[in-house]
Length: 341
Image (cartoon, rainbow, N blue to C red; front, side, top):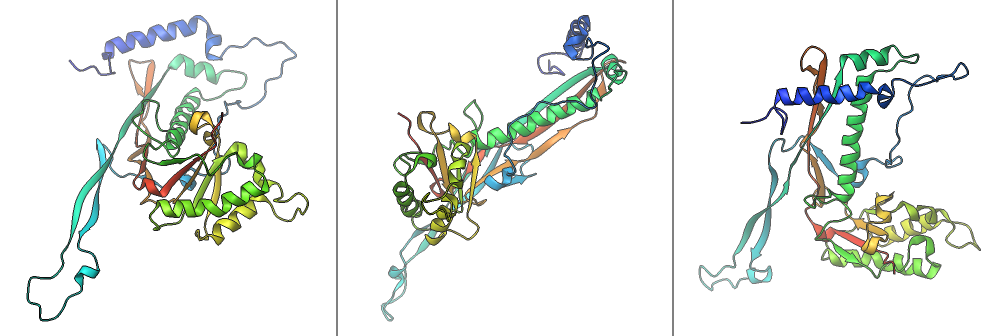
């Protein structure tokens, strides 16, 4: 018999709900609603919320194309692939008068690629007593609003981490750990912060060519994602004796001179600090295009109204659906690892 709440029936859930709240009310300080203060204590307005790592002025879509609303409630998302096979161009050269049915033939092979869609749910629970108690504090706040903020932040941070590292169950991969992407451990003998001018010159003159050759000379990169730990090194002069331009300017000019698009960007994350071989730094050079890699959010974060379980208890549900990062053309992504000894 199906259970209304996963492994629990509605009655079992109500019982657990009330037991949990009974424990909480035995010590109201557990909920932070009761605090001992003195006449010299001043209560400040508002609430101080927990702070988490975010992308520091960079949007997630700066790194990965994200498509929202495609494939909701599908178990997988599939896309057809077509490859050209058959005769070469020169085999189409004919000699007039040689007769019929001697023309070269071309054909296509149709296949598909797929990625799994993940279904996500999260609840929070509250009681009338908890809501009312938060309203009568010396400094009032909305308990329900804070619960909703916490759940939304859980979704946002989860999507952010999935976008870069995938999920810990190994079923979804992120930008930094695609299994089919080539890992190069020779282009960066040390991190940007430790490079000599000669090493930086060598990197700038070889990296674009290495990437271009990997794509069979079909596309140039337009995005370089570096570890946040290496970001400070880009702001220093390329030559301390002649502090005219920075290393960032030098690299951007070198990349553009080598043929990368005018919109080439250098971005950074802390996830890159330890995503490489043996926990070292990982730099990622790639073509940021929806045909190269995409993350899908088939159903965005969707909260539902509180509903009662009895007269005094309330539950709120939320759902969402997401994929990992789909590397459709892994040859257009290059990992460059600084190997730690």
